[in-house]
Length: 371
Ligand code: AMP
Image (cartoon, rainbow, N blue to C red; front, top):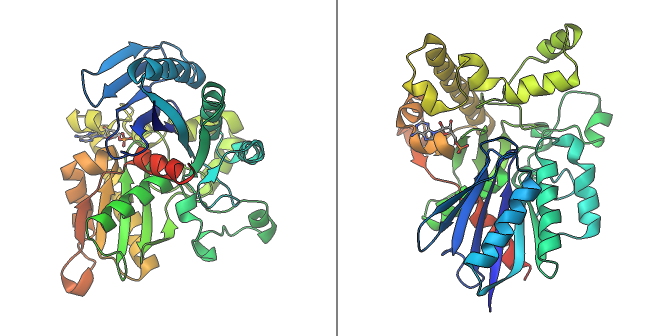
């Protein structure tokens, strides 16, 4: 039997996974995803490095059920591999976890206490830990945190202008997409791109969107804050919003649950366009509302990246990632055009790069460090 590592990247209605031999992490044996979990269209896709891909319908499956099907499939497809370690993506590490950590019952207790800070994401990460511990009781389980990359931000970029006791209680700007940011900065370094003396903005534009200011290789500020709602306009999330609007809505028929649904699931590109949360659908549509939604999305990206230029005292390079950032060249060009007033390094303009994030690779590497 050969030692293997498994990466489990649980999202709100999906998860991605990769399994690799412990001595060949950059050549995964099998990867894939489960998508649209909890809906009739739930599906598990397996993509072996060799051989044909396959899909299995999982109507109305929970994360737990989909993981059980996945673990059975791993046993069937990879009979020679023994899972020794599992790297989990956990959205919220709070103020406690600033590095990957081996999962113990105490750690699970701490992560469970953070559920109220990320109610739509944290439970799925915990469900994955639970399912993996039941199936692979001997394996080392490691948690990696989306908040960790941002943990060293200066106080002014973590604070919220409320009475200070709220900060002490954990009401602060954490930031998310950190595992993606780590993967991107690692890839840039491996590519020979110098992060020292450089001010870069990582524009992660997917269904979730964020901009992170990275100066000298460290996160200084990021557009997401206390929750993954703040900052850029996203597929279904509102991004930046005047808090007075929330008070108005609460006084006029909304309660916390309906407001949560509105802000997380019915806003963003979907809300603005009335059509779709998916940029490809909007780009293909000739409706005015779709066009307006795209224009709004671009304007917010320009505003937020400009803010990061202010935070860093300059901007050398914008690094695009995520489904939109990697694939939609016209959006990238429009954003860069909006930034053309900024001088860039030595007056040469701002560099534009595309760098896909590989979160599962980060999870595998973190798990290996604990073997
Ligand atoms: P992600 O969450 O990173 O998978 O990104 C999903 C988003 O990327 C969706 O809005 C997709 O419509 C968008 N996307 C993927 N491919 C393209 C493309 N070729 N052009 C425009 N948007 C795309």
